[in-house]
Image (cartoon, rainbow, N blue to C red; front, side, top):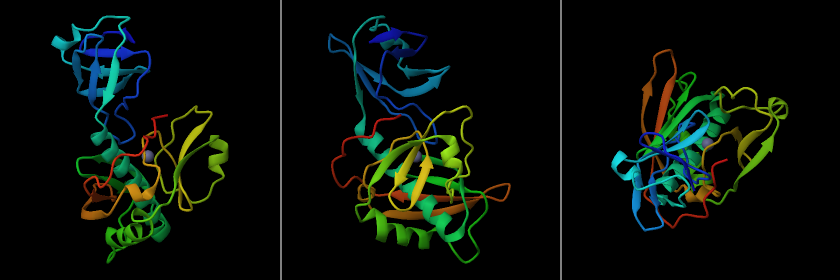
Length: 234
Ligand SMILES: [Zn+2]
């Protein structure tokens, strides 16, 4: 249901659209009115606690407060983000296990994604060894990906943190994305439920970052099978 219509935007009572955040690009799709009018959603963002769906001003006129609309998400785009996001968690975890270097931030989009290490990989090594292990042990095998909810205090006692990203303050509960046997990282994004859904991942050239870090880049393959039941944003 449409609850507000700020300029160029639509607020709904509930939504499945994922807003830009946590390095993951937003969903796109459309809102369908009771008359069957299809209104393209070009961008979705968090604005002062609300999820704003961006639509063209011309199309916004076809909506009214209280109207029931159906949201349709571009699943091809969303599923690609889910696969790339899961790949990034796993690659960050293996880099951390092999080299002890945590990831500071990650970015998904286009044909894959990238993640920034707080310092470069040791000279003579690259993402390739990590990718070989990931492709062999995870992206071509079924390893479950699930969610766990724990308190920040409980999380502080867990060893081996592959992410150096700062956690939001004041949370009573953290949403952990758990890749069985290898990684537990707080994240609000969307991921696949099984590492084999990622498929083979390829290396892209790394980029040195000002300040001494290093950006590792990767590319995922085209969709090989239909999307699984999606993991909803939390
Ligand atoms: Zn994530």
